[in-house]
Amino acid sequence: MNKRCLGCGALLQNSDENNLGFTPNLANSYCKRCFRLKNYGELKVKSTVDIKKVLNKVNKSGGMALFLIDYLNINKETINYFKSIKIEKALVISKCDILRKEMKQSKISKWLKDIYNINEDILYISNSNSYKSSNILEFIKEKNFQDIFIMGITNAGKSTFINKLIKKDKILVSDKENTTLDFIKLKIDNYNIYDTPGFSYTNLGSISKSLIKPISYVIKGGVSIVINNKYKIYFKECNKVILYLNIDDIKKEYKKDVYKNKVKVYENSDLVLPGLGFINIKNECLIETNFDVFELRKDISGD
Ligand SMILES: Nc1nc2c(ncn2[C@@H]2O[C@H](COP(=O)(O)OP(=O)(O)OP(=O)(O)O)[C@@H](O)[C@H]2O)c(=O)[nH]1
Ligand SMILES: [Mg+2]
Image 1 (spheres, rainbow, N blue to C red):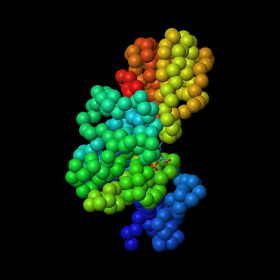
Image 2 (image 1 turned 90 degrees about the vertical axis):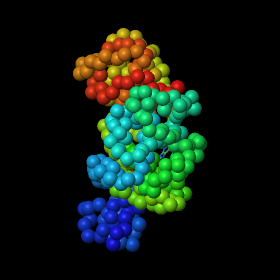
Image 3 (image 1 turned 30 degrees about the vertical axis):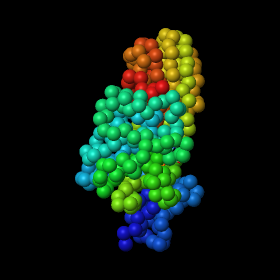
């Protein structure tokens, strides 16, 4: 029997309780893991996704891919995942309800092109009704592929998006990472739409859910910004910063510790904190951080 779990996409099986897809009753739609996640929000074992395997399968398919990333998770690593897709593809900025209306799509697209060399189509969607999304079904029609792979980073809203397309809450969604673990094929009109397992990446924090509220600070010299009680950024001299972060746990303190990294920052740069967002730093300076700086880029705030 080749029935797949509607939660994670694994083949349902009733022989090995410790393996993916186990259900005591093969008539069920969900495996035990997804039944518990759906009904009790419980996820005991964290599963990982073999990204290479997913990419191989998609790259051999002859179909087309839509790759979802939400605004605060745009960074080198997530963009590189997008770039490893070798079939026809488009970049989809998801959860656009978290963007403030001043953040213009045209501006975001421009910096995606300038900074990350994206030459493919860029679309904007939200699964909440408050935002006017790009018309994905029209877009797919124009492209004329039969197999469409909905890909992206974990928690970007892929499964929610497919449920919206089919107008049913069919596939399991959750705020846990790696809810979907295998390909799930659905028919919409004449297309095969595939939900796919999300890609994980270096992620310092939680995934953004609500409107981005930038916070402006004038930082005095000798002061550090402390984020989540954990990530510290020290400014030797006075500077102006704007924080585009999805968390509220931010404070300032006079420096007490020794930080391991010294980083040169050019005027109007973004210090990227994967999964948390970014900090726009206005004036050229030297900063010290207690974490490895993953990426500094030219300002991309879109405001
Ligand atoms: N603000 C906002 N939240 C969303 C949107 N779409 C989905 N979410 C929330 O984001 C979380 C993840 O949604 P999923 O659809 O499970 O994400 P996924 O990309 O399928 O995740 P994996 O299967 O783990 O790769 C859930 O808590 C959703 O309610 C959206 O458009 N806006
Ligand atoms: Mg999913």
